[in-house]
Amino acid sequence: MRKVWVIGGVAVGLGMSFVMLLVVGVYVVAGNIAGGVGGGSKTLAKGAVPAAYQGLVAKWGNLCPAINPALLAAQLYQESGWDPDVVSHADARGIAQFIPGTWATHGIDGDGDGDRDIWDPNDAIPSAASYDCELAGYVKDVPGDPTNNMLAAYNAGAYRVIKAGGVPAIRETQNYVKRIRELEKSFAAPVGRVDPSEQAAGPSLMRRRSWGRRICGAGTARPSRVGGSTARG
Image (cartoon, rainbow, N blue to C red; front, side, top):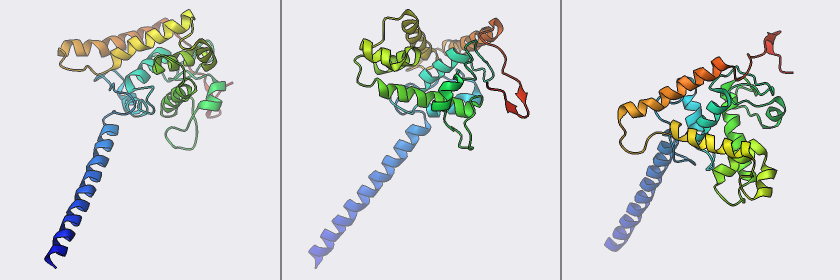
């Protein structure tokens, strides 16, 4: 009888240990997601992204392994300088600079409010991340760096990347990939100890450049609202 009790006690102990490991695992995964650790390994530098968008970029920048928050921030900065109302001469709109045709097929309802608004960063930023991950899926079997290939597909189209077997020999595309990867470093949190003045310099420079982009007129003003809705052409 004592032997049965001993075996039973061991079984219960093992069961409790398994449950504890499972609980700890769940909390670790949850903590990683909350802390911006997901597909990408680079988190955001303090103050690099405007406070209104930091949570969105940190969350959606971990949507798939090909992107990370710093990379998504670099793309958004390059596209719009964080201006949610900008319109390019090619009719690309909002903070993520989707053209209406692309938005119609790739825009998502990021905030779950029932609509997909190209002007709303709560929809546009998640859509930018989703579109990146979709492109990454198209070029996943192409040799080379998967993130570079994704960025090249964003700029030149997935077909050209597949046909070239990597980043195609198009100067604009090569420069775009290089520019985004360089900006990514500016938006990424430093690894290891960094002098506070150096750490602050990156975000400050980004803000000055963003202001400069708006002054120099990278795009036009947002179309006026007619009858309570945006005139989108």
